[in-house]
Image (cartoon, rainbow, N blue to C red; front, side, top):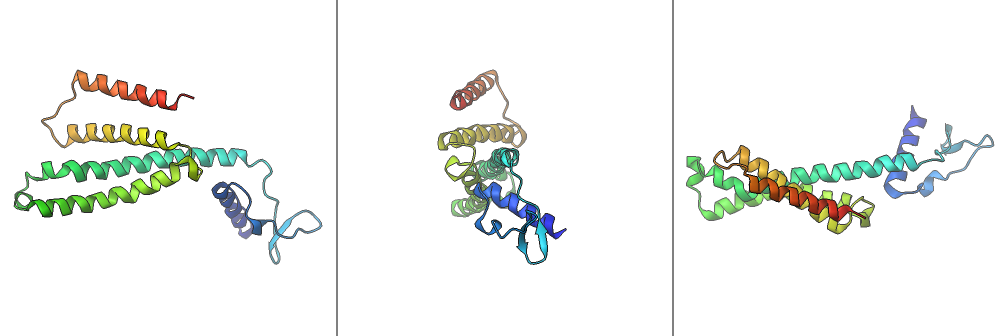
Length: 180
């Protein structure tokens, strides 16, 4: 069990740092097995790590998009939720400063997802997306989350033909952004 654990840690560190950590290049026995802990023998690190790194890289893209969706959900509630919450009697009695502070508190959760999403997804940090690609993904998610929010929370809103056409053009913009 312990050797398998060390191998998993090595694979994880290789995926995170893109190379084997220095401490993993420990002394080797005569039979070609790496020794990292006295008395524990661990097989060599896999020579073909590319498939593992490829999956990890794809997971970074998925994680980035998932975090952006969560972030934008909180952002939409922070920006527009107070318009719906005004229907509640106790909320309607609050002043503008209190509503701003409540929205600001909700927006804190937006940043708790937005910042890690950008850090994980940015190509400069080993992520799959350029800065411009991140921004375009963020905007398409923002509009998608807002469309769902406005239809589900504000029952008096409806999706019209011009909205759908505009959304198609936004999707085309994303296509051209990612076209190499």
